[in-house]
Amino acid sequence: MTDRPPPEHPDFLWRNPEPRSSYDVVVVGGGGHGLATAYYLARNHGITNVAVLEKGWLAGGNMARNTTIIRSNYLWDESAALYEHALKLWERLPEELDYDFLFSQRGVLNLAHTLQDVREGVRRASANRLNGVDAEWLEPDQVAEVCPILDVSPHTRHPVLGATFQPRAGIAKHDHVAWALARAADALGVDLIQGCEVTGFLKDGDRVVGVETDRGRIHAGRVGLAAAGHSSVLAARAGVRLPVQSHPLQALVSELHEPVHPTVVMSNHVHVYVSQAHKGELVMGAGVDSYNGYGQRGSFHVIERQMAAAVELFPVFARAHVLRTWGGIVDVTPDASPIIGRTPVTDLYVNCGWGTGGFKATPAAGWTFAHTLATGDPHPLSAPFALERFTTGALIDEHGAAAVAH
Image (cartoon, rainbow, N blue to C red; front, side):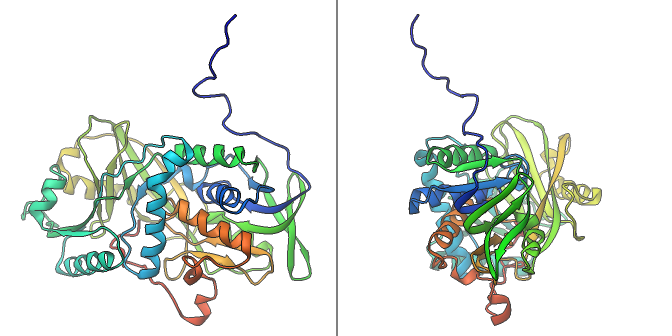
């Protein structure tokens, strides 16, 4: 009998260990940010006595429910630096993790439909170039060259007056990203523990020394929260009130089509963004539902309006059929920028408030949060995003500054 080569896709990409009684670091939340944090704790800092605790299954929350757009063309210096670092990490991660998660740098168009949109777009493209981010302003005929199926005629209800374009932006397969990070973290010795809900915190005075879970107590030297829409609920159990509100965010995909859409198109004015997945589905999203909530669903009128907007921009999609819709829970801060760093409780750290921009930031969020958990100090890229900015007034207001909320 000859030896068989190992299967290309083994039954399990990572172990499913029982939780130990203590770890150097416990990361709460097994989504993209939690997995990236654990991976970089082990890779960059040599800290492998780490547990990632996930109440459901790995990457079953927002990581599996986003629309996979990756870009770094944010307006403010602090945001552009963080997201550009993420994009540079994205560009080398497939080789580093030895996993093809279908990272496709097909570019992102942000459309302008009014003179104010044009002014904001030109300003943002200029600011991007000053920060070393690839960005350019395109006139309508140039937009049509990038995306021929987009209606740029002057007779539409919302005519396209131009667009910003970031060629290095694109999409990636979100669940494959999670699997790649989980496999790599596990190989470095990290315990990835599914079905383990954190119900409270162990404290010694004003210091967190571990977590209470539905599978018992787990002691920890430091605890990092990376729980997205549930971050404020968890932090409250430790006595920390975060300036975060959670909203549903919906998206949808169509039935499969032949490749027709070569890039990613985003429009804040009619509020829709559209790309085409590798299998052929049209992926569409819009804005958050206005109410606060933790349901992974949303209101029908949001879906109705985003489909109407998509058909106006892309008449060729008029007969496309919706295959399914879904929702996630986004965590939004007053300035639409994340919180990364210390909390008032010693040895409790938080990575939250990414709103609708969490997926694209995954590697940079993990890189900077791992640095903070390993050293106790903020990473230079994440230092401006400290919780204290809401008392000092040093806000990084990305509401509308990035042309679209996603």
